[in-house]
Amino acid sequence: VLAAVKFLTGKAASAVTATETAGRAVLDTGHGLTIIHCLTHGIVFVMIECQDYAKARFYTDILKDTVYRHGMAAWIPIADCYDEAVAALSGSRRAPEALCRAFKSLQEGLSQIGYHSYYATLATAMIAIGQAEDAARIVDFVFHQGPQRWILPEFLRLRAATERAFGRDAAEEQRHLHIL
Image 1: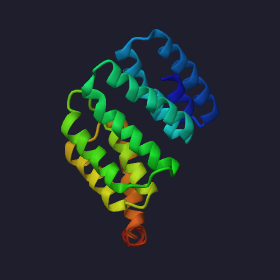
Image 2: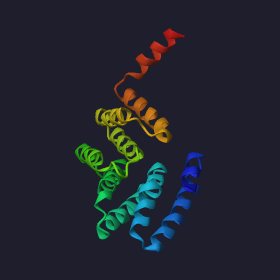
Image 3: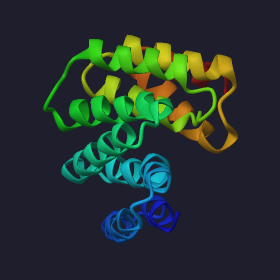
């Protein structure tokens, strides 16, 4: 949580350092569920948000290994989500099909673990590789579900990003100017 606060207050380098410290501590526990929970609910997310894709990849690989080693299949959709998002955002793999499969996997298997931040990560990756239509589908899905209150601003940002990608921001801006 401290790392996320540091990131959100504009201190990305401090966020990465705090995340690395937390990562070492959690890995030292050796407890599968604790490792999975910390990686999925903070560590990987912060590394992605800080655009430290090498560390995000490192922790995503640990996440996948831990999920499989401890037989916690319910976490596979999240591990796949992060795996594909990191690959797209880092530029190592720009396959919209893989991101779409990760989205479908989250939809089908996430009800007991669901945080909408995973969908935001996928939508961000879709936008990064030029797949605004797929990102818009994810954003629409979350708005249909009713986004979790804490992540609503991120989904509004993502909706604006998809609208810009479709070239609709100028028309919308003109419409608002006429209203004023």
